[in-house]
Image (cartoon, rainbow, N blue to C red; front, top):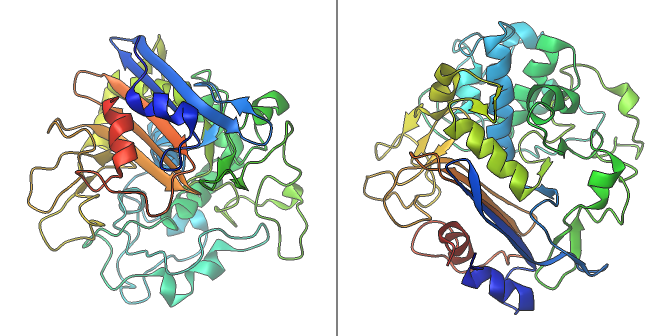
Length: 384
């Protein structure tokens, strides 16, 4: 098995390259590549592996959507119901108060929300209060426009909590991670100490830690503390603050774990004899809920041109769309992630081939590639 050029370069960590990276490829249910290089923890000198948990950023949204669909199948959630009913308070766009907001709109970034407010809320915040700020909303009616908005994920998490009475991180462990045998968690609290000790530290290009510098233990406060600095998770109330466990980007999972999520989607909701979703639910997730028509959404320089339920679809055949990191025109499903100098990706091909990767220490002005993705992401996707 050949190590791609990128990961060979990562091992030496030249200035333009990631500090660490990992890549897993699965074909026909068999892992054909499992590669890693660089330092998961530069201060400790610990090498990266494909089994190290890393904060994969927005790929979290795809995994949350799997949890939502499990609750839909169980009859606890309805994709097209007004979420206000479960929230216990009226959620409406301030300019379009007659338009109900649904999980389908939230999961497909068509709910009218905008990231004009900080979606990283302190432990004692109330989501209802945060969304009362007009800056949390765009100018278009729900269902009429695509705008990628991280603040929608805390709403989804709050709805899930209200439907089940369970804390979001524990709920996602029960619904998705544990059944698949994945050692992962949202915001560390639900992970065991051994998993937290293997955390990939998110760093600046020079190795300065930004997030998850766990130093061999679980962090004292795994979430954003309350405004007075306290960190009492016993104060949790179902649905009050869906942002606590960072559903928009706080999943810690390994490259090998990501590949297993990809195999679940590629297998129509089943992997290695474990069925989490029906094929119909996977189809619902991966069918475009929004397609760019030239004026009905914000593409972020061609990065987003089609979106399902928590799922990006690539290689959209339309002028202005630059959403193909592989450069081969094959339409894939999955999601990308970017936060705290990390880039990540999980992509599933029509033949169920899965590519999962992450890299840390990526400069904010990293060179773009041929697509809207960075050159580094393209090299990780393509394996060369």
